[in-house]
Amino acid sequence: MSSHSELGEFLRVRRAALQPEDVGLLNYGIRRVPGLRREELAMLAGVSNTYYTRLEQGLSNNASEAVIESIARALDLSADERAHLFNLARSGTTKRRTVTKPDKVRPGILRLIQSMSDIPAVVLGRRSEVLAWNGMGHRLVAGHLDFAAPRTPSTRPNMTRMLFLDRHTRELYTRWQEEATRAVASLRLVAGRSADDQELASLVGELTVNSDEFANLWSRHPVENCMSGLKHMHHPEVGHLELNFEVLTPPDESGHRILMYTADPGTPAAEALQLLPSSDTGLGGEARYARATQTFQATL
Image 1: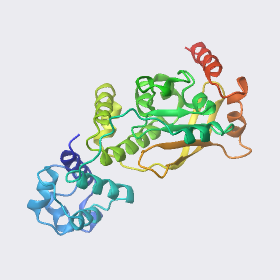
Image 2 (image 1 turned 180 degrees about the vertical axis):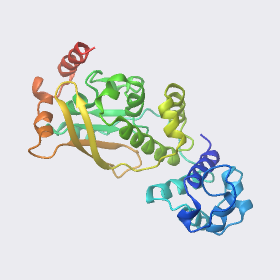
Image 3 (image 1 turned 180 degrees about the horizontal axis):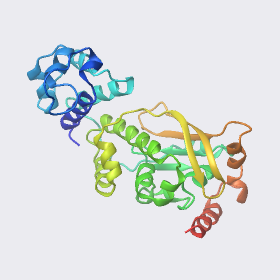
């Protein structure tokens, strides 16, 4: 993914989403394409049309922070979108480190999630790959997969890949479109920070080729740092679940995230959630995986 082309695409998509009346301009003439014209956006940002056009065409890689800030204001970007725009602009001039070594979860983080006996927890890498999960986390989001799969890079599940390409995962989310949009928005944010990440580029390419839904969402360039919210699920073993999710980010440069699920006390979801570990009170996972797999297979 070229940082210059990504910057240009983001600017074009956001410009197309704005109408003249949204920014206090008169709508005149026939518009061949939706949204503001380049010259209108350039005027609002206080830059020359020629310079702004070069940015959209990926021909300029030295835009100052003042110029990017002016463009962000003109486009009325959210805080997450503004941060994404700055990341894209900086990636053209800043050498970024490409992660080449296989990623792994820190032992302390692993002990932390294993100690959460009644809270499903999943540790995600920067590309949404599963680095680890506790027993309840595995049972909740991917009981049809091997509990030990995250231990080896070649067999690690990827939450975004599963969401678009795995039938069981699609069936898990009753509001799949909402979940898919959120996943793509998060992945876009990561892509802006890691313009030279070949593994991420490979994942995006795979999903674009194999999922028209992903390709459509990706082209819309949604950007959001999804740190909390609600997930609506229909689990094959315990039924409907409305769960809160929280994402904790360790204060290091790993890009890892700890995704945790909770239910409001006294709700049916809270009662259902407690049924997940009932078939295996230990945290070993292999016996739990075998039972979960049989349950999923019985529904086919």
